[in-house]
Length: 430
Ligand code: LLP
Image (cartoon, rainbow, N blue to C red; front, side, top):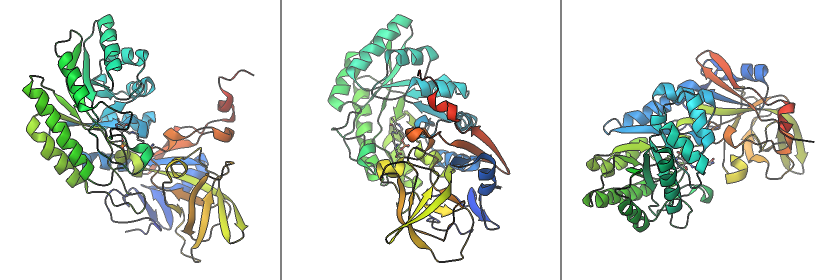
């Protein structure tokens, strides 16, 4: 097993050594040295491993084999067309939250009949687009939205396949910003309210009750909140069935946590067992909306050292990537390990603070992080950057956004060119 420096190894939900590992002293994505990619496309750059995505998808498929289900990849985690196309080939469905994501999936060749549309603020235009496309399910989050869906469906003379997103009122998720399933959050409907709507519109001319949905949060590391939410959801489905409303789809959202550094996520088997135990007796078709689990460890961010700077006792390593390229450390205080791309055991590790060039103190990737001696020009690798990486990138400080590269075996391909200087003011009028 190759030594991958400071990475946690042999634990569930960490990057597999077959996808990213040192070969002959060089860190490789599958069969391609990251140094080679950096030399060809420059830095900062996102690099994804195709086999890592395929493996994550296959693992999730395998644990749910016993239950009729469809994995609907949450596009928001990484929406590059090449990544979406890969999911299309794998037979995945999709969870979208905007007209933009819907169109991306369609451009990547995704079938509308495998798309679910979530989100609290769908616009009239987005609802029309979804209805016209003939998507699988609209996850509706409020009475006002339901009325708008009904009105647009009538206008287009097309039945709307709808589900209500309910709020099961559980606390879950690693960080307050990404918790969604508690009654204090903006998401979903309380059960009494949802129940009232299901009953009231049970024989609606244009609304077709196809399902019920929930998504309780993201980066969830314990199975318990899923268990509680699943039991509640199952009881709601039973309640509706007793009143003659039979739902075909049960959409349980995403949220499976991964190990970026020291997190200890649940085993996938336990998650599947819990979900299956609650839902199998209902006879529904299960929809899952995982984002992070499928892509987080399929991606790294390459960056080069610009300068070293000593301030009193602190050594700053200033790199050419910044918070605009990868926001998670700044936004959530997330710890993403950084290692050198060259396997270099010469010299003792020293504790350094890795920062980017953006003019904010929050532009910091890691503090007091042990790193072997590095010099300007050295290539560094930030791990676990495949999910909520490029999609959260911005042009802050007028920095062009990074390139994206997809590796497959011994080959790599640029799947998004680095932004040019002129992209920075595209659409502006001086
Ligand atoms: N379904 C719905 C309705 C969602 O809102 C989300 C994520 C997902 C599925 C996918 O969740 P996942 O399996 O990836 O946990 N930017 C944050 C994560 C925000 C997640 C928002 N919703 C981060 O970087 O941690």
